[in-house]
Amino acid sequence: MKKIQMVDLQSQYEKIKPEVDKAINDVVASAAFINGPEVKNFQSELEKYLGVKHVIPCANGTDALQIAMMGLGLEQGDEVITADFTFAATVEVIALLKLTPVLVDVDPHSFNIDLEALESAITPKTKAIVPVHLFGQVANMEAILKIAEKHKLYVIEDTAQAIGADFTFSDGTTKKAGTIGTIGTTSFFPSKNLGCYGDGGAIFTNDDELAHVIRGMVNHGMYRRYYHDVVGVNSRLDSIQAAVLRLKLPHLDDYCSSRRNAARYYNNGFKSNPNIVTPTTEKCGEICDTCNCHVFHQYTLKITNGKRDALHQHLMDKGIPNAIYYPVPLHSQKAYVDDRYKEEQFKVTNDLINTVISLPMHTELEKAQQDLIIQTIIDFVG
Ligand SMILES: *Cc1c(COP(=O)(O)O)cnc(C)c1O
Image 1 (tube, helix red, strand yellow):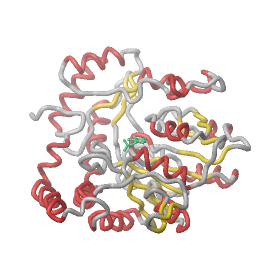
Image 2 (cartoon, rainbow, N blue to C red):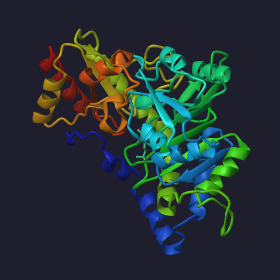
Image 3 (cartoon, rainbow, N blue to C red):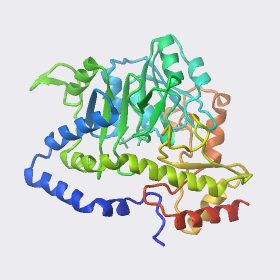
């Protein structure tokens, strides 16, 4: 059996090695390192895949969030609501731009933003909602759009963990995660579902005007060379990363279904264990391929008998990688503590940080590896 890894990027690379090596060499030989044809081609191929009018590549997923908020013209004091249980990048850029982050609790099953908590956090100062499609599951965008329309708010979808996932509306129409709100952002960090071989990110929108504003913003606020109309940033996807992404994009749907198959195999393995809660999907309650609403960036269990920390240590001792995403809720992080928050507002997050554990999840997981992981966990948790 191959050594078990949390994410096995080497084995994935081996399968596409000749094409990737050639593409990288070609960029080096062409010396078109910045804004070369690979970037433009990747941009249009991703637009086509997502069914969105504009993809604006940038340097990473955190920049993508920051530039999205700059592009929307959000200003100091504007309130932006997001989930308490997520990676810090989301709240970080809100704070950096001197906007006011408003953290709210999440749903205990989907781990995505709690709709009631979201709606009751809205004030006259609220300007935007940032749903994070956590662990690969698309948040309930239909409900979120309704709330946003009612209160005239922008919706910025943080799609760093869910590229390739779909959301199906009650009328049967389907849209790709990241293309449903006002604007969407993603990350191509190597371990993300569509990862490059360094840093990368992108912004998506169907709004022509907004796309134009953002295209200038990623490039020092220039709409004409050396004329700086707005304060921008320097945030580019480089050509080598774009070349890698162009080769991986045609595999994305297969990558998503490998992840889903692995998740389904885990779910079966842990079935009916009283101390383990396996992930479900909000849309259909199970892991089905038809609606593609969950692409399992992470496979995350809840351990309900108080043995989560002990299990984490036990797996480490046995050489089975695992991780706690996330160990501290954002509202308790030193950088983001705020008197406005009361602990009882975050019942779910405060519980999740003590119960969740994420298992190895990637496109190259083998059944024998999963069997060993499952058996080791069941033997320990009881
Ligand atoms: C990874 C991630 C980001 C940041 O992406 P980078 O490319 O690492 O800057 C933002 N939000 C979420 C939810 C993420 O998982």
